[in-house]
Image (cartoon, rainbow over all chains, first blue to last red; front, side):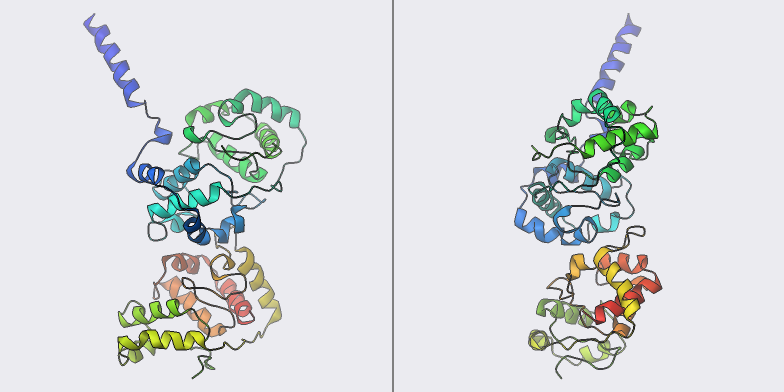
Length: 217
Length: 157
């Protein structure tokens, strides 16, 4: 009986410890950035150092080298930016541009506010259109619960908006998440796509790249 | 005296943003930026005159530079406008503006002497100039050939 209680306690204690998922753990800078009120006008000025790569209007590049950021949820943008600069997400190219010497915490909140309200034109890079039926099937099975029917994501859960994103970037990140290279990814997602073939990943990214565009909520 | 140096190793200052010029003058005075010529000269200037100097050069009309190798400049334009996605060099246009006019935070590069631009990029790469950590990164990521192409293109802006 005592052993069972200890086991229960251990299980309960363990539940407490993982109540906050590790992929989205709180840390001072992220919490602070999320709590600050973002200023769109200042965010536009601060974003200048980002647009050499993410392009004017934060539209990214169809070749997948840099993602589209326009219209993304502020929560997602703040999490990803602070994760990159704190080493929770590996991105050697971006790291110096996200460094404390380049961006204050307020800058991060401001940039996120600026990006979230940017228009998202329907000119994102798309896949070949070769197997959209498979893409739809996989999306409905594994993606829709979190990312939504229209790929709108969930701001309060830190699930990114996917609609309007470039196909090649979606594919690049899907691969990284499947193969364990994106360290700050939700393990539930890594599990869901663990057995995906490259063709499966391509099909679902293709489907996503063709979702209708709605404003991020 | 019009801020348009004819010596390729000495930068044109005409038309640069006053705030940017002020920041560089202060950096030289504080020893944060060093140059064989300027470090000596700055010691003889009263810091109270810095803002007048910056205003003076900022108001001068810049003269155009000269492209010597159009093919090289064309390579430079691609890099200036689009960056290098493989090495993570951002488009220069992102900060320095598509026309190279710059602003208070980022210097004007349009029409600048090739030799001066190359020296600055090399100094950022080596760490000799460290006035902007972002440019230190850019300097390290640029190849020598890329730097030459960029300097050639900027001269023609």
